[in-house]
Image (tube, rainbow, N blue to C red; front, side, top):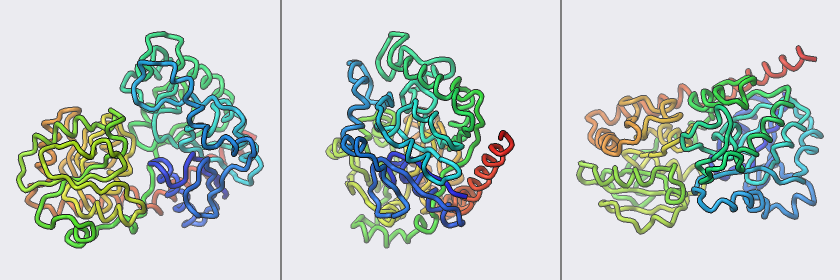
Amino acid sequence: MKILIVNTYDIHGGAGRAAYRLHNALQSIGIESQMLVHSKTSDDPTVLVLQDPIYNSLRKYRQKLDTLPVDYYRKKTKNLFSPAWLPFSGIIPQINASDADIVHLHWISGGMLRIEDISRIKKPIVWSLHDMWAFTGGCHYDCECGKYILHCGACPVLGSKKRKDLSYRVFERKIKTFGKIPNLTVVGLSRWLEECAKNSVLFAKKSIVNLPNPIDTQAFKPLERHIARDLLDLPVDKKLVLFWADNSAGDSRKGFTELSDAIRQIKSENVELVMFGSDHRINNLYMGFPTHQLGYLPGDHLLRNVYSAADVMVVPSLQENLSNTIMESLSCGTPVVSFYIGGNSDLIEHQTNGFLAKPFDTADLAEGIDWVLNHPASQELSKNARQSVMENFEAIHVARQYQDLYKMVLEDKDQKQ
């Protein structure tokens, strides 16, 4: 069995890291897997970059060019919107020329692939949804407008009140394109996104299943807290609250405003904050506690250290699929506090390995942080966190589930021929 995983990036971004982890997990159980990406960061020879002279000449400009139609909307939000209109990708001939049995699409935005090109793929397609883009009129998260259920238009992400706006036109393009794809299986990485896909017009007649991302539980395993703190030069006698700050100030969906409000309501004493990620716009903001800025952490070993150093991780997203940071933190034995939204409940069992706060109640989010920090059986919480990931998301276990899915897709293809 040969699988071609297609994603815009290999080890950059949440979707890229998740897709690459699946790529490695498939290889570990004997499946011949390759990745095809727009932009390669790793030195992995099984990760391929598109070989097309026209595409390569425009590679670094394609993402900006793809978003040019969005710039017309002066009242647009900062939420990501991808029209996926750029031609001349050259990707489809390379996909069709490969010897892959199945093409497994992941996150294909950022100017990588035009919507219409998807229907030109001559192999069975599995498509893992890392956000809502595949079944919306272009937004990656819909701010809970729900218009994808019937038809997008007058898009709140674009700040548009016009029915036949860009989102309407993108939605129409998807209707025409997806209707031409006979062999498409959609994977909702969370139960929430699976349900959203099932409720959408665009995927109403497609096969939709729920399978998660995998994680290497040996790469993300607990390190003794005092050792992790020594390695990061963090205080050993404080309660450390960890949060990820990549683009938090620029994307309201990340919930930084709600996090800031919740942090100010924490009642616990002896608390300090730890922030990691690359968002320098919030480095100088003061939330009432001393804050350690760790910046961007390249490599899983550094992420393992920071998760292991913390007493609690807070992920305050307002919409979320299946968060890598939640999964990584739990795998390292660190409980997580988040809102009870999206795919968070796939990972967090309330008051067992973390805390699910009422959406978007910042007082309850603060209560969850205090609950973890002052829990009388913190070792039990940590054990539960690790165990939940081992049982449900461990890489080999998840890879075998995908292997079963691929077999089903190929059997279905043979029956149709």
